[in-house]
Image (cartoon, rainbow, N blue to C red; front, side, top):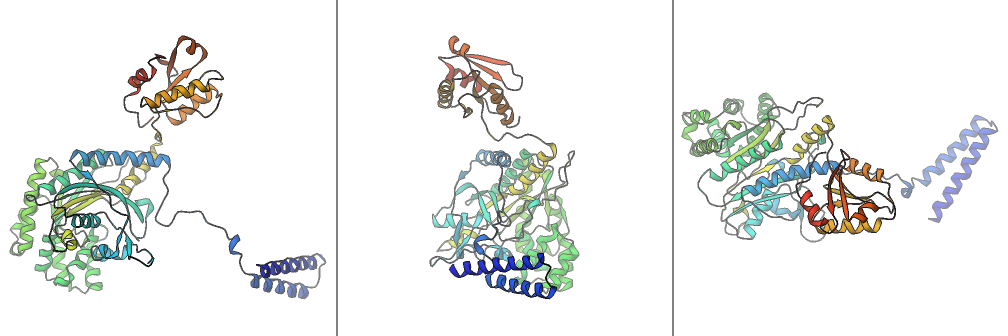
Amino acid sequence: MAERAALEELVKLQGERVRGLKQQKASAELIEEEVAKLLKLKAQLGPDESKQKFVLKTPKGTRDYSPRQMAVREKVFDVIIRCFKRHGAEVIDTPVFELKETLMGKYGEDSKLIYDLKDQGGELLSLRYDLTVPFARYLAMNKLTNIKRYHIAKVYRRDNPAMTRGRYREFYQCDFDIAGNFDPMIPDAECLKIMCEILSSLQIGDFLVKVNDRRILDGMFAICGVSDSKFRTICSSVDKLDKVSWEEVKNEMVGEKGLAPEVADRIGDYVQQHGGVSLVEQLLQDPKLSQNKQALEGLGDLKLLFEYLTLFGIDDKISFDLSLARGLDYYTGVIYEAVLLQTPAQAGEEPLGVGSVAAGGRYDGLVGMFDPKGRKVPCVGLSIGVERIFSIVEQRLEALEEKIRTTETQVLVASAQKKLLEERLKLVSELWDAGIKAELLYKKNPKLLNQLQYCEEAGIPLVAIIGEQELKDGVIKLRSVTSREEVREVGRKAKGQRMYAILAGPCPFKT
């Protein structure tokens, strides 16, 4: 420290000498010589780490959320949770990190995106990549064979973030899963019904749910000539068809993954088809595909699934799409993904490319991977891509300049004259005790105009005014903030109960 201080003093003195020579208009050679000495001293000194500028920012792929943004998020979460509960789901929670070995080998090529935590001399840990694998571990560990659960929590992926499209490294997933042995396709149909209910309720635009089956994919790969060892890697390539052209996917399969061009062409004949139950029936008659046992089972289940979807009234929202592959290793049967058909196009809005907004499928073998005896628990579930939904809703509200309330305060306790703080404190306490959402300004003698302005800014609909005359008459005046008109006069003795009756209705979300 003392050595650095001495060097700093030398730099200071040398700097003064250079400035002095320049003022004296000394020779260029002399000035140049002294400047070189100054630079040499500065190089010896090096940067002062204690004085380096600290950049205040969130880590890459993460963000903060303002009260306004959180109000939107809470509203979206409320729609989702109410739907999950309407379908009889229980809620669980699991740790944000798991043993590394729990997560490895479950996500195919995406395993490279798992965040590993630094070894602290104990267990090797990783941040959870999704909520499905921890759920399977939870079932096996607790020897559960039957549960309908939902779980809303953050997950972590070391991905290349695209913030404007709702792709982050830290983000929420909203999962619903049904575990247990049941008759075919009934739980699967309910999962698709839930997906449609939520997306319709959120009003984010027209959507389509693509459906396929991993058994159909595997059967298709087999009859096309793909070796067993390449099933998963080719599946991962096919899964990119919603983002890139068939030619690019074919080039990847042939050039990077060593697939024969004629095999890729045969795959292309299948994966570019999509339709409804008629396509399922057509493929059941396909001379090659119908000879594959796996594909035949998958097609039979899909035909049954479409019957149930028709009964649920959502068959018009579903498309059987042979290009849907879902790259995760743990899927074993039906898979599905919801995409927006078109981005919302209301006045002033920018087009949004947010991709899929929900996905899921059947994974009958995952729990068995964790069970010591390999006992399987059939599972099917879905995950809502809430971050992408938030991006749509936020941009829509910004374009419309729509005001969103960030609090739920129903009434502000205000005073019309000075020296009424005690009365305001007593009244607001009684309102809180009666279950009413109430506030007051933290000033002894606030001006009435300032109190009303606060209500307007915060979107508080009512103000309870205490004044000298009101105290004499034993009443409290309730006034509408927007119209400034008196709504009701409440007697002092029954103010808690009476005001509760007036304010008991739900607080408006928007002003």
